[in-house]
Length: 389
Image 1 (cartoon, rainbow, N blue to C red):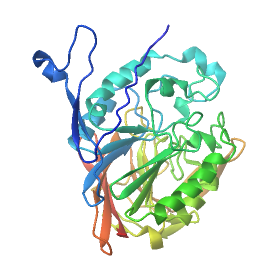
Image 2 (image 1 turned 45 degrees about the vertical axis):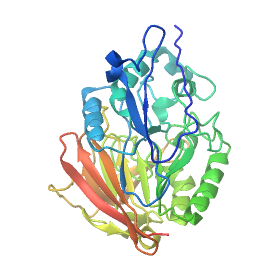
Image 3 (image 1 turned 180 degrees about the vertical axis):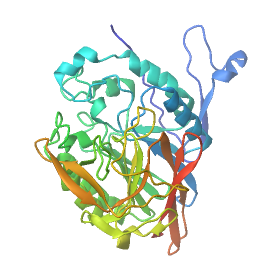
């Protein structure tokens, strides 16, 4: 079965401008009066970094009523953009990236996903990266051909052809870096080291450039496999911890967002694998001195996982001193560990909304991160603060 997808490039756009568009074909003019309901809109990023805005994020969505409910709530946030941290549609339900997975691959799932997502993506930039279920072995050599056929992402990463999910962009005072964690995952190694170390070298260089760039206050990094999580299903990925966590600390990354584990979990501020500052619900963290906070936002729509410790979230706090969990080791083994950094755990469908409040130079800019359940209930919030440049 052949499928065809058309790509339309929009060049010469002006910053901070709302554009109207329509998609037509022979015999149908979307600009005609009777078809005005088919006209869509989008607004480009502002020219200046002083305007407040909101963005949203999650991972592991797939196609379900829970996924659709999250989309509706996201649209209500009026986000400037949305981050999808991998495991996009699950056309490949196996998720191992192996050739044997091809027998269960179903390309029709992509059509269902795109139809489900259209209500948001028609007006909100939908920025994605690759998870293990996005290594679709139907497409060789790396399994990313299905995505490349359906959309285009920024081509400024280390290798746009072979790693379309690694790139960066800047919106206002916030820089966002997307990474392909399949490249460093010890747990699911089908695409391990596909960049031969180039992505990690690019990450180090790019984070340094962004941290030095005037007008950028915050750096947000998102990717699929978890740096720090305690669920019974995937927990933490030792490859991510070894290759990338030292770079996040080196460049004082302000927020790391992951998927992979189908729950919401949030750490305290971490440095060197340990708690550098406890960050209770509602607290403020200063990354340059406190360390990095990691959020797992994998409750976008697929079946939920569970924790080895009780849920603990806003209004239902059940704090524990430590959690016994594990991280994946090179070669696919598991290393049991007891950790103290698991601050918030919520077993439910959810996403995060991040309100960005810029400030004038020398004053304090903030990121206010809220985790929202599909009921609309807030299950966590905290603030990241940094002096504006």
